[in-house]
Image 1: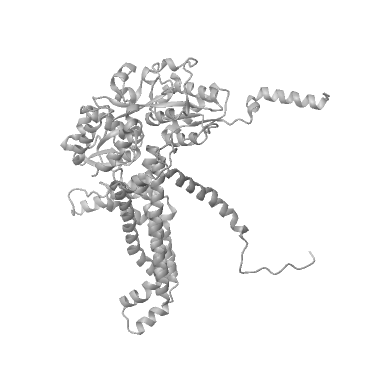
Image 2: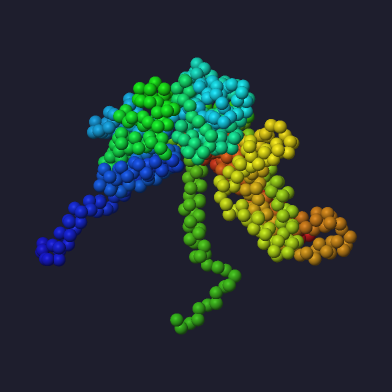
Length: 348
Length: 287
């Protein structure tokens, strides 16, 4: 091999460049792709999680690709060997589907610095929960003078034609059905009492919305005054000046774990792990807990504050006591049958 | 270079220019459609066992059939409303000066310039409990308690009719424009009244436009997922929502595929009825 000045120079420059820009050495690799949810989730992650990740990882390339859980599953399923997504975000139902279809890797719990800080309900070995979504009672304080305290209040005669619910397509709708079934002696395996309860609710029902988003807009239109509702969806409406309030019913607010997963065969395993680590830190979760995001934290080191401390829980102990977690493994077993039954029986 | 090329047959065209579009259709329309068909012919969600189970399930299930029926009915209602409301507009367009024509065409096209979501939300505001209609009727003292308009079949039909109206009006305007206005005068001078002229001359000659408008409106109305679900709500189930539920929420892709294929065939059947009518009308118009 002949070394002349030119080739030596080129080699030196290349090596220098690789040192200066480590990204060059795997120029063929694609950036880390994080499939978050659309809407307020995307905004929150773009504004808080992504900058935190970039700061901690020498500006590693990351792309947000917001889409629904079901679309994430479909995309990864279509190319299992070389998935186009590295990190997935899921509601409890789809999370179990993704795990069942062998699309996600177990979370490296031993090497994680923050996993053990999570409250026990959020510690999921196949993908930890960096956030909770909370469902409680939503009402219009201008029309409903005494704040409701229980799910049972929806059946009060004074709310004739004023109640809104969603169908079972959503996590919210399904979770709520299970909760009212439990209230009347049912369980995740037996929602018959829940269907009977909805039957009795019919005189009060003003609307069965197609999705939680549509339900929220019905408050804006004065179409409904009270409904089961997602804490975060209500905060968005509130910020826009719509008269709505959220209250956790005394039976407990329904909490859904939003879990975050490393996709199996991801070419960016290491970065994916680091992104998830970032999402678990107390710093990121604290920022996301504050306005305008108001996302319920799962790291026990986060000190609850603001609206979340006011209406949900002041600390982890109260959170554990006030939140109800459901067994989605059981729910998933029969969910399609329930959806079918809801289609047939609930006509108003 | 020397010999002049043989003169090209001007009545035939090379297929080369159509090839890119044909290829596009083949890759992005025909191939997925075949995949859909393949998927629908499986009995299990993992698509391992072949069979006609999904079709049997749909066709023997009264509930599924009722969803199909109500969707096809919805399309018929919307098409009828569009036809009844759209025809006079098209008729008027042919009888006013150029200035008014511009205004009419602008009004007809205006809905196309805004997104379907925006138009549909406007209808939520109009039909809502405290919406424009209820507020007006209440202030006039016509009603005491607000009428339920949102989340009803009536609401869906009205909203869809407005959203899809341009698809009906534009073909009608074209069809009516092609009718020689001397025919009207001839009919009148031969002693026919206005109504007789309309039914015997104008309507038959405009049938191609009516058929085209009906086909477009019908196809658009029954597949309008956004308007159907936002105005109809979660318990009024039409085929697009049923499909979405099975595919997206339940991940039951084979059944969802079977629903799409059945829906596609049902729509094709209705459209072919329209086309047959169109062919008959051409004979009628020429007679």
